[in-house]
Image (cartoon, rainbow over all chains, first blue to last red; front, side, top):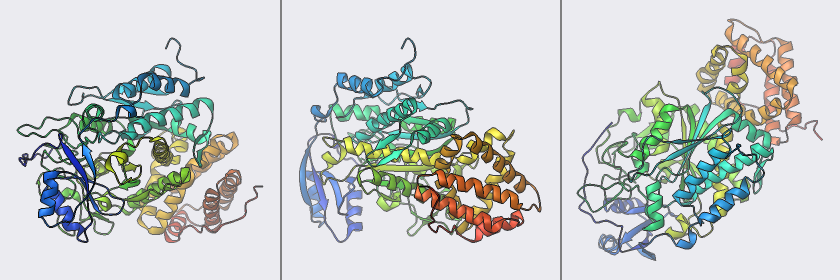
Length: 109
Length: 492
């Protein structure tokens, strides 16, 4: 299998602090993508064809310094999934029981 | 609501314990980076040998794409309920009849890996809900994780577009191809089973993606193959303007199956997924769907696997609600429809009818040779292959319900194999008439207008070529596309 040395960028983890949903509405999409790639930014699909990123404030500053217009649409705090969106163990089990109700199970199971 | 890893594991465990006639749970050879077990669930029903066609559906590769592991276990239960109760699977406006679901379960080995990246899912639920990668500790950096969908051995480490060699990037390809236990588990399933179709189920953007992802796709210049490109360069080393070759029959198959999936999802509740190549979304290397399809090219001894990537759910304009909307119920229904559509397209009539009536694979080989070495070489021939692939599952559903039709199908199959095996053979008029009557009966019993049109095109061609030499029949099929004029059937 091919291997290659790491290219540690000396960058910082994006696993802490505040980030932003960023779009770069630019005519020169290829250049914007190149910039985002060079900064190793987390690029997301975008319904309008813009370059859509999640970036820290420092990274946003670098994009602006690079001459790009950036739109910040939301602050994205690093946080666990909203606990209200996590299924309860009892609900998970009850759902399964309801789905397979009436289907003969292996004896003894 | 989204299930925890423990809940997903509990469901697969209980399904295998309660319904061992349908489910077998397998712990994959490698634990995750943090030591969690990774499970696959195999679904199959009925008897039959070990060498079934396999379909592999993988979820949770990217941790934050939470819907798909849930959708995969829900699909497993939908199929179980349909098979056990003899009821159809209905998702909104799209219904798969019970006999077609039966056929899928009795013809295929369905391998489900609901969550290939359990550490990542746990991390999303407990620390960072936008985490994408696995939980690899990258030495000498402050950054953790490898993007599992960049870590496979297809132009691995070619850092172009949305692939990076930087450990801090969310699209970090890892220190080597298959450096991660989570990707080696998927390779293990591919190495040990005859996987004919594959889907890595992601979110979001409502897409059905197929190879290639590293370059645009062309079917003209066979010398342009990834096997000649450097890997591990950590630079965008795919030459500018490079276009990767794909066999035209494979491209046709990707297109036809992808379009069918799009149509089936649209029938559920009107969501319009887009089929395109991975490269159309953005340039990547080392992805699952490209790797699985590339295997038979890199090593001709391996099975060909048609690899897809689904991107379920819409772009809401906000990353958080796109990755994990408050209520993913309807998106999961779309995802289940997409996966069931792929299963449906993975059944092969030639194997189903042919294998039981031939002592060896010789008869099948003759038919496959005509398909792959002759029909597949012309546009018209490929249209006929696509037509056959479209009608085969509904037709088999009808045939297997009727003993007389089953016998007729087997007889016709033998006749075809015999004609193909004899030099200078002629298609006898009475055999052509027999086949024509058989096809007419299928059309009358079908409830789908599309299938009726396809079957009538087949019947029309048979009537034209009756009495001709077999090689002339094949030439005629290679030369002219199916005539799919609509016809009135005798059905009321």
